[in-house]
Amino acid sequence: MARALLTMSSKTYSSWSLRGWLLCKLADLDIEEQSVSIADPQNRAELLLLSPSVLVPRLTHEGVSVWDTLAIAEYLNEVLPDAGLYPKDIVARAHCRSVSGEIHSGFSNLRSALPMNLKSHHVNFRIFAGAKPDIERVETIWAECLSRYGGPYLFGAEPTVADAMFAPVTRRFLTYGVKMTPESAAYCATISAWPPMVEWTAAARAEPEELEELDVEF
Image (tube, rainbow, N blue to C red; front, top):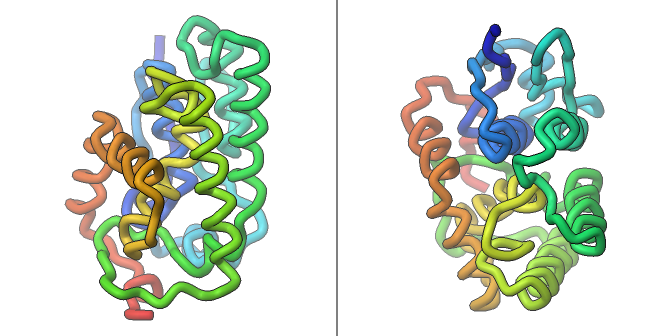
């Protein structure tokens, strides 16, 4: 049987590619990685938040092509139902889908004010005021989940789709030195130590390509 193919863009800058890759890792799906060129105009538009449509990551598996991270999550949950992508409890599962959908479809101010960049670290970064309500909402989601399900991941002892969806946000918070509650900081540390995240971060830092527009000092 042919290996699944995951088409992605930059590991340094693409939060969507990170999410798709983490979902495949959660499902324990054996994948071959295919990178689209950072010079491709559509790819650059996606990374610079100029494109309304994100077509990577794209998962090709057994004749099926799926793009959009939530679509990939739902597909993997269907074909690999024992992988544990979502909580077993129906109430927790609905909650997991809700917060995953919320981070997927919203938080545009946070995305633009704190762009994904795994090679950068800022001290005393001035955060755009419009992003602060987004940051507060993220921390509220984390606090509610960690309190209700006991941590260290959002829905308990094991990572789920929600952790894959929020993983790029933890990196944004750490990259730009966002002031967080102790609970949020502990969650960010948990995700940073999550083995797939460690693997992705190391690969991002070894990535030769750079996107000059995202390397500017704000």
